[in-house]
Image (cartoon, rainbow, N blue to C red; front, top):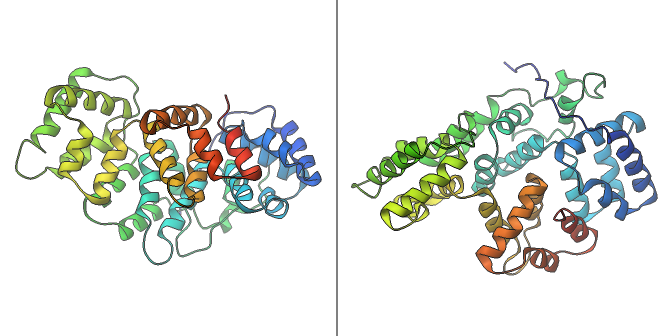
Amino acid sequence: MAAAAPAFQLPPYPQAAADAKHLSQALESGNKDQVIAILAPRTWTDLVHIRLEYEVHTGKNLIEVVEQQLDFNFQTLVVSLVTPLPQYKAEALHKAMAGAGTNESVLTDVLTQSTNNEIHQMKYVYVSKKLPLDKEMHHLYYPSHMKPRVDPNKTTGLDPDLLVREITDETSQNYRKVLLSLLSEKRSEDPKVDEGAAIKDAEQIFAKGEGKLGTDDDFFINVFTTRSPAHLQRVAKHYRDMYNHTLEEAIKKETSGNYMKALRALSIPKAAYWAERVHDAVAGLGTNDTLLIFVFVANDQETRLQIVEEYHKLYNQNMIEAVSGDTSGHYRQMLLAMLKR
């Protein structure tokens, strides 16, 4: 039975009404530079407030207006930005599992790099891969003083167990176990690290992996999906100090396939992970614009700036130049604006 729609609370954004007014004027006049100036610096929660103010005061659906006024990748980027982040990620999961085959890279991108709160919200806004995407799910984010334009009882994404069931159907073996563990929302997010516990985990990872015949996968899955990112960074440091090679090398030796990729994604710094994904999007012939847009939308400004730094460390290249060289027009202008301090 579908659960009642939860009330997702957003931090206030006092400038929303003014931004919504200016956005309306910019879209009506076709001033794309102004659209970029308004949207690029905002957080996703700011953008939800702007969208709600826009729709309440104009009576128009912002996504429909954007689709009429903008085009190509610039349109896709703006639509993605004005979609609440958990809904945007849930839609990515929907597309990854809809139709024939499964895009496991997207499942890994979304679930290994999301907070427990984001995963909790994704469960409620996820729409079955067998149903059309519901672009009106943002009504779950309306403040109490705003009346939603959509009847919550008519939406399809209010079953928090649906995403778990579909991930179960679409994946298998240890990779499935990793994703289901993440979906249980039990990953620690404590920034403080107990060094003794980190050392013990490093020792146990060796003992239950490289130090024996075979791998204790249940132990690996438990550690990598329940320990905090900060804790795992210290585990990686101690592992390298004790065994003279990296935790990443151990993961690659002891595991394989999507299972290995998921554990690795959980074990390396967030900015480094996304720097690699940007490189995946722009390296070689052609550009994976879907992936590039996802990286920019899924991360806040501070993280995007850290990604730029990590990109240079990993590839000795300027990420801004790489993105600029693979994009054009207002699409490029918006991406570059999102990389400014």
